[in-house]
Length: 149
Image (cartoon, rainbow, N blue to C red):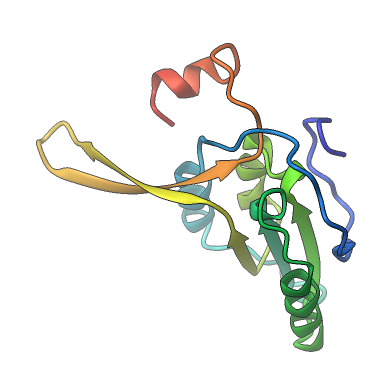
């Protein structure tokens, strides 16, 4: 599914394979996805077992199969179904879709940074930005870039 631009719907376990660097990680939009997740009251449906996601953007540059396998195993022992998103799947579109995928728990293993901005009223606002594995392009996500999303 890497490169398809669509978010995978089926659940799978991490393969444990080492993945080579497929692209340059760039900070894009995670704050909006996380804010939407909270605005929706968290996620999680009333039917079926609880669901968890492991978003492992670092698997491209700092692979850690043991982390992925052990974390998945512990979550499954606790009764969760687990989706694992390897580095090449960690895209802007994935971050946009996360709030709508009914996860009860999301574990991010990702590069992140703190973005300080000055709001209209002069107050400093801190935002957390997460990195994707998409190569940076001035031509993609132009509206988001113009709004600094």
